[in-house]
Length: 401
Image 1: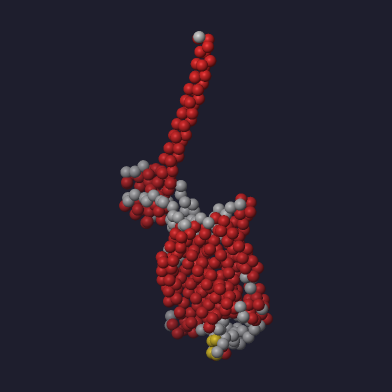
Image 2: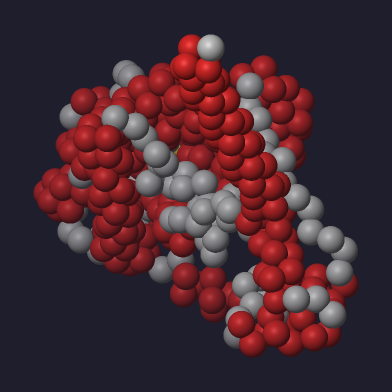
């Protein structure tokens, strides 16, 4: 296909602008800003690689020492013995072999089925991310979300559309974008691109698929809203998201450090903020669906933008359900056992730390404890018997005299 034809088709005015508006009508520059251009988003790709490099440096120079300061501890795990055939099967075939595969592997390696199963348990646990890795990941996101929320709120505090959503559409699409809002957009999109690039190496949690969908929808939403100059309402959407995300990441950090009360308190605050901002405040969908129609006729961008917002809202409802389950457990059980939203402390295919990791050491400790208790019981019985026999002997002494 001819690239010029593809470019001409992609940037048709009816896709990006309301009826009756042309590209030359919005080609403006001034002291207040400039009209957003699609080529501006090219800078988000190198920015994403910059974020990855900064994260690498941050985790090693700041997050790791800080985790030790807070008392983050990693579980000691038994390393699986070096068995090439089992290692090859583990990497190329399956991490959880079936019973027939266990039998075949046992014959090939000359090991019992029990040892084969134990080896795979140890090997799976060996690949699990430790608490330090999870802490570093949470601390990096905490720093970005906190800085983004603070900077975003500072850039919007004097903006009229923060207080009156009708101002998002007044004069649309001939709305210049201020430099602060331009950088807010570019930095947010670059960050989410970096998260999507690192998704294969980050901790895989129970809502892994939902997180990937969320990142993709967010990137499309930021990119499309910038090109269509939905920047005003887009800044509100990003601010709402950042307002609760840094609270969740801080709760995770204290969870890994074992600060239970602090973690529980932060989670309660996060739950309240999340439910209010995502289910009450976020439905700026009413603004984009209903109020916007008062200022311009619906076009392709109108439907596409609202469709992406609805995808995010479905994810918000899903996460709100998980959070309410956590709140229920906290109220009626008095303890947060795990973060049902995204910090399930598990990989996708193995949701719990497999007990076999401690099996051999803990089983010996349990057997040793049982033996000691039996010995103590026997010793106690012997002492009682001796005392009883002594009383019987003493009671018979006067008769003998």
